[in-house]
Image: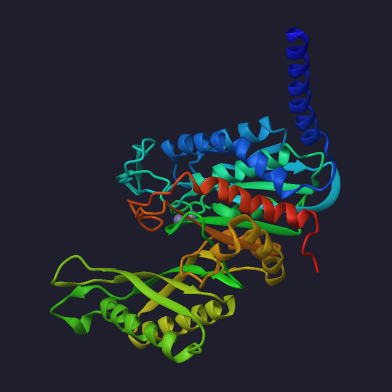
Length: 439
Ligand SMILES: [Zn+2]
Ligand SMILES: [Zn+2]
């Protein structure tokens, strides 16, 4: 009797486990928040372990060889269609749902920074390498390790719901978000140039970013402008070298450089509307080797930041006019080049409105905040120029502790940010695919 009872109990328990599991696997109705949350609970520990692995083995821009291999292996194991070697080390995984629906894309970066990590994390990076001829530490000081884990987590959650999933999700793992090494191409622009989105074009693209000095739990979003454009410039003034005691024999590029620094400031104050945000900074000046030689070359470099491509174009045009007139006025010549241009990151308004309720369900209404645009740049903007994009940020600072800002030595992102980032992005993507909040 006891035996029969026990056998019955075992049968009942087994059936209940199997039936629940079957219900999860077999359900082909719309994906629910409860199902997403259960899948995130299932995957969180594995994603945190993966983050530790990535964090301990950081790689610089365009050198993300092992990181890219690891990501490709994980995506293949989930059954995604995987393509590697895009823009050097980029990886793309395509997940096709069993049901018809739109094509969308989501991005994570792969690269780390030449920063020597100062943290007490047990999985702290001790990696060193040579960057611009200097011996440097390498660290995930911008939280891209957290992005990799969270976006792979989203891929795992959605792959396990493939039979309920509407449409197609393109997972883009992008190299060199921090900018390629001097003389190399890279990042989002190179991925697009090499044909990303050409064969399979998404109708929307999504991205997110860790915020070092904001507590875990908070989510920030932007209406319209989120991050500034970034355009670097180099100016060369050519003159005529002579003995410094015989100025009449020289054409002095140092004087031209000095005039340029002052004159360029007037572009911000005289040529740009006060209501437009713009920064024009001359950050380096190099010229000359000795006090008694007037040199024949002076070089200046700097950066321009705006939230509007038209403002950026206007500044660049005026800079050309100012620099040429100074060179001519002094009897010399000048050339100027702009490089590593990144457009302003502008959130699509319709997409932002649609995604907002997903973020509020994921993080709680009071934790989702409208943020002011930041002067930093992110080349997610390149994707947003091709298709409508939505970008948000999430806090990674452990409450009660202090982390440095992104890119600082003491930037510390807490593991507990990973499940929230997974939930926020999964809700945003699934809501979009299931047509929730569509106009
Ligand atoms: Zn960064
Ligand atoms: Zn970053």
